[in-house]
Image 1 (tube, rainbow over the protein chains, first blue to last red):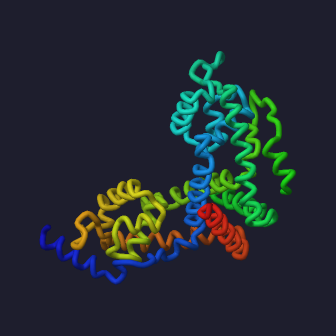
Image 2: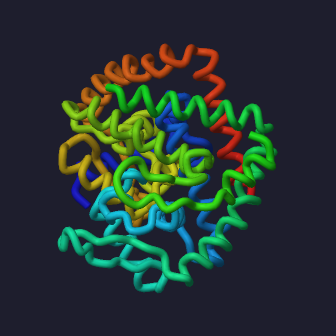
Image 3: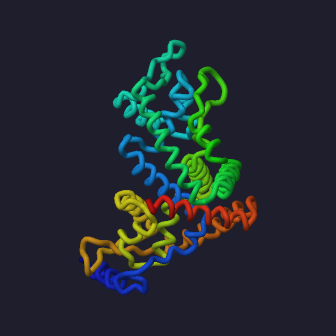
Length: 166
Length: 166
């Protein structure tokens, strides 16, 4: 360790806030984006734990729903509707295909694109997942009350519009 | 939405929707996690555009704030306080270091850990960013009204607690 580094290390160890205790996050805990992100991460972690037995992550679950309801649509259309970047969606579909849950069929009209469908195995897994989802979602509604839960979704939609508009 | 309606929304039979036009996303637009994620992505995209001139992404901004307010804290402590995975936080700090915004000093008491501080350049950039942030955040508050905005943050904190508790 060089002398300058050592001095800095000593200063660092004696900094007012070094050691134990809560960190001061300043304005972060009251900023829209920060609170949104921490909440979204907590909800997604919860989702991943809840759906671990089915082996479904949030984006995979969304993809199965979108494919089931729009069979034969192009991969790029499903990705766009879900707001998932194309490169990420291709990787996601690779995994679902490998697990035998979905099938990508080369389009007869546009050979560069793929039409997506669920396999029977994928449809059966989604059916199970929708059953788990119902209880999962109900907990949020019962904790907030259905009026407050609906209010939350409305406020989130407004924030999304404000952000998309600028 | 009442429980029966919610079940109906979740179970609603899919209608083939191939062809052109809007995709049917079934229950997704009314699910807490999905609405949260789409909103969070829109807000982060907005943040990235707004702070592009300063070259700051949301997690980098959060890191600068946390380091400024807790100088000398260990890298692992800052990461944990912000809810960022260690591996991701190391990559984030590499970039901030390379830009000369932060400095990592090997701790004299624990040679495996690093104490973080802002450089004068980092402190100056953060000062500018906090000025931009004020206007950025004000727009959310003025669009929702400050009462509704506060309500949104409270509801998000409740959802985060519900998710973390199970």
